[in-house]
Length: 420
Image (cartoon, rainbow, N blue to C red; front, top):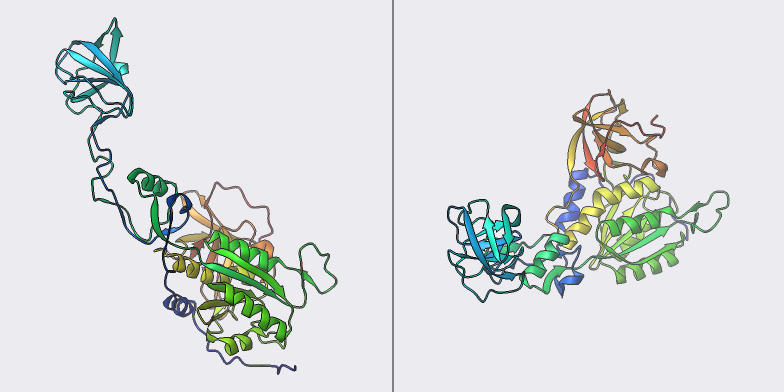
């Protein structure tokens, strides 16, 4: 099969904002499923959760000490019994008595305050109160943590450790959540070999597939299929069809540019619908967004950096949308450049960088030469600098927007990479 050489693209050039809108407008959170709360960590709630009763249900002690009736001292009281958490008193506290109580213990009838052990002295069954207690001292009221029918978790919240703890506290052992999107990752190209192989001249190891599989997992997706396909139309059709049939989202790398072996765009147009095929974006202009039936398809460029940056900027928010997250995008901050940066002439560029908190400001330095094939400039980066087009040289000290992809670093230690 001879593929004609294309010199112009049939696809209009979208801005980053237009492409992002086109993607997100076509996606909705996946239909909720019900799971045991123990299996819900990292998932997003699809329903509000309310407390079924006051939490705690009774007055309880907030410290280890003595439950008493509050009044001015000095006091010498007979100790009736000891209460630990989970026990209930079988005695009534009066003005001449006290109950030894541990943190979390339910206050005995009559008591209205707790005195800490540190402010007492006990001997021969009597306790001396060294600090005059006031009504309510160290007493946790019913409903202090949550009132009956109070909403404690909202739909759209990601279930981390505090949220899982709250589900347990209110007794919600089954919960409605959005599932993780099922994702297939397909690398293409005759020149691609497995990482275990010593590549012959002109070949490269498949770094894209494994980097994208990891990026999907970091974004909360579940990779259900991955593979590699050479640039053969029949084999590519089979691989795309198999991957799309198994997944909510198919991510491919390579085969979306203008060469004779870039077979993916025509195939996607035949199997489904292409919604856009170019973005005014660097690195990653030939990014393609399509659908095959109910499967969302992202055709990413083949260069490793282009593949990962387009995944970060466009695919990650889409995966979060499918999971039901309310916040889809990474946080953006304003940073100061530590060195001059040359803007792209005609495309918004996302330059890989390290952002540090330095002398009361956020300082950014690029991670070396910003080549689309140089994966090293992604290693250790915690930000993408959004450099507007125009071609001018931005001097050191210029303020630009950074998309934070990792933790902000502290200190002024320089990085050891080449930043030229």
